[in-house]
Amino acid sequence: ALSDRLSKLVKSMRGQARITETNVQDMMREVRMALLEADVALPVVRDFINRVKEKALGQEVVGSLNPGQVLVGIVHKELAATMGEGVADINLAVQPPAVILMAGLQGAGKTTTTAKLAKHLIERRKKKVLTVSADVYRPAAIEQLKTVTKQAGADWFPSRPEDKPRDIALAALDHARRHLFDVLLVDTAGRLAIDEALMAEIRELHAALNPIETLFVVDAMQGQDAVNTAKAFKDALPLTGVVLTKLDGDSRGGAALSVRQITGAPIKFAGVSEKIDGLEVFDADRHAGRVLGMGDIVALVEEVQKGVDIQAAQKLADKVRSGEGFDLNDFLAQLSQMKKMGGLSGLLDKLPSELAAKAGQADMGKAEKDVRRMEGIINSMTPLERRKPDLLKASRKRRIAAGAGVQVQEVNRLLNQFEQMRDMMKKMKGGGLMKMMKRMGG
Ligand code: GDP
Ligand code: MG
Image 1 (cartoon, rainbow, N blue to C red):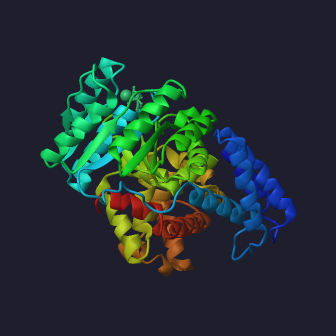
Image 2: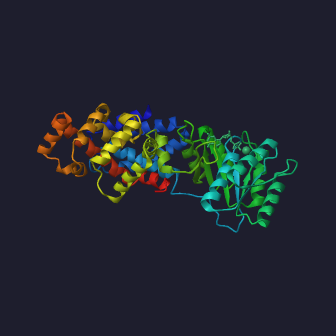
Image 3: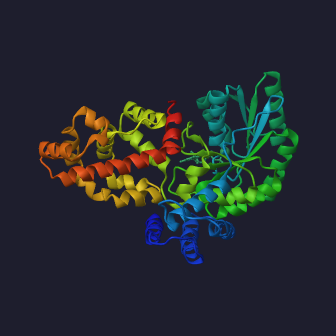
């Protein structure tokens, strides 16, 4: 797989001390492939690679990193920066009702996203929300919006298929005003492909409604085609944001990069399931890992969270957060969590390559077989030793080894791996783990 090729390349640069034309070229070849495989449009890929090259060549390699790791870091950062800047929520800074117009091809997920957004605005922003369908071509579409709006706990404005979309929308706006709604979400008709008549219609809707947000809804599975679609909608409408749907599919989501570049509008949300709660604020950092095929630390931590009881994870996070050391008790807890998650090597796959390379040095694949033994060793330690591993000098190690029925070298190896893990924990401190904990409401 691609992530393997990237990690291999990073490893192959281990002996090198500097970033050079050659290793930049090597890395860019892989990154280019990664982006194309993720269905990013070719001109967008070229642009991106050129930018990264420029940045990379001036970059110094410091600390224990090798040029490969530094380059991956630069690529990742630039990718995240290209796809978004901070959190971009819905803008409601206008005299209510704030109108949000949904645009996009048929099947992109407009109707579903309308309801998801309604729910988001009700729950997170405490708004009173009305939805309306301007999709008069398919009566089923109006019914569909009604059903999902109910699920969202929002109000729905009935549209008569015999009326004009513009008149329906204006009637809904009038209703929203008179009944003191904060937000009116306007779902629009599907376009199977770019169609001039329908484009004219949505332009007309835009002119009549003067929406504060005009959201372009696009299917992440669209890949290369997303470019043309995005271009057409951008030319027709002043887009204020993008919703990337169906990110729960296997697409690597390269459309995000293309669409972002072409529309210039921020990607505000990601659709992650068909269900009404399947909407997330778009996380560019996290998405960059996916596009590169490198896994990401947030996904990793989420998996940990699934496999273990949340309290244990929370305690661990608190520890890391408070800067109070990660000790052997935590390590023991981690070991049993990993067993539940299908072993250390499965975990390694989810680490970004930089960390995976580090962990790889500790030979964690082999450690998987030894987990039970490692538990035995830790169990032979006194509670004080587990809390303060620094106490473990030669005589204590001999006692522990004898108690666990292993060689002293094995005790040393375990302590080594513990230190690797502690380093990883420190790295997670600033990023994924904290995000996860926030999401859990911790
Ligand atoms: P519209 O034609 O743009 O209104 O698209 P719809 O909202 O009707 O969605 C088209 C199909 O995509 C439906 O079957 C939805 O359930 C599905 N869908 C929409 N968003 C998502 C998503 O984020 N994930 C998944 N898996 N399916 C989605
Ligand atoms: Mg629809």
